[in-house]
Image 1 (cartoon, one colour):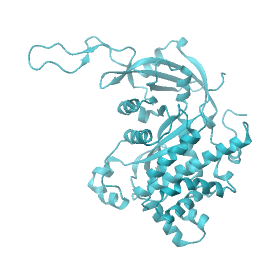
Image 2 (image 1 turned 135 degrees about the vertical axis):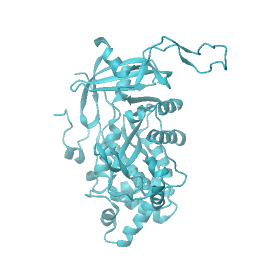
Image 3 (image 1 turned 180 degrees about the vertical axis):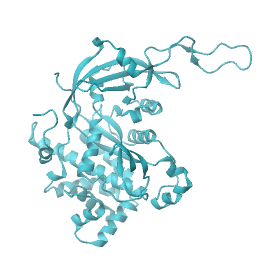
Image 4 (image 1 turned 30 degrees about the horizontal axis):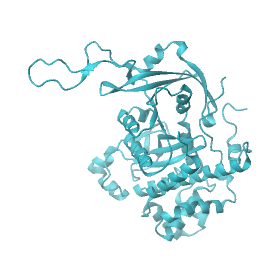
Length: 437
């Protein structure tokens, strides 16, 4: 088997490893405390971050406050107000967070990772909750749907931003008007698809921060949206987007032109495929027709899953835009050696991009998926019981900051331990990764 293609470092530090690091957390909180307008807000933010990092079975507000503050009923209510109703600006904290991410993880070829994460919920009172497909459960269920942006480089990975997806009914049907009011949904919010929510986050990061990045990777839920891909390309970024097998492309650019004018009415102005030109082909069909000599065996190191063997290939193709030829892009194909599962990607990376680079980027979705696992397992990401629009975004903002605290600490401990540090307690608790002995 070939040497595994490295993607990014694994986060192997958990709250269970943090015994006497209160001073570390105090210094970290000091980076963001000036962004809170009031002293009380700064204090509650510090307590919430501390609570998220404690080793608790559940991290909803009441057990979190009890662990940090002791038995103080007024403190529980005050924390609920801070998260659900507080006027502090989560976006400002995230903008500052992006600067810190660049300082610790930033690289010129850094990767933005777009993905969704869902949160099962009971009842109908939480903002945006609806019976819909829930990725966490793998079926339709009552849940809230979030869209997140992550970042990865060779140094590590973290989360950058968050958006709550509101189903169209929530914003257009009169039956939801009272729910919107109770949950504090801003009146200016309109229905926005998940790809557009992703675009808003990518655009915000590019416009408001110095975070170095070159690539955007995403799964087919986002990759199928050609408008999103064109917007990403318009920012000067290179995408490598997984796409459905029935995505159509042209192996060569077909000829287009105006239909001949009959001499009657207005002359044709709409460009069409010329007669006799072929229809675009499904990417899975192109993969099936590729000769064996076009495939290469590669091994990709995808986080805790260990090395993944794959046969990979790439072909220059023409994308489809509204039935007409669009940009020339890479079609990247990856077939699992053991299962035969085929993954298909499109990328606007330059024509001289090495195959190894494209293969490495195809293995860069795992960091955000692992960040979700870290967040839900260790940081109370899904334990919130707040129901409001503001509360959801405030909670997710502080979870993002808590996750990056672990990332920074891991980097510092790794540096002080030398090139081959001993495994952390968190890594030992998880056990060996698949494929390791």
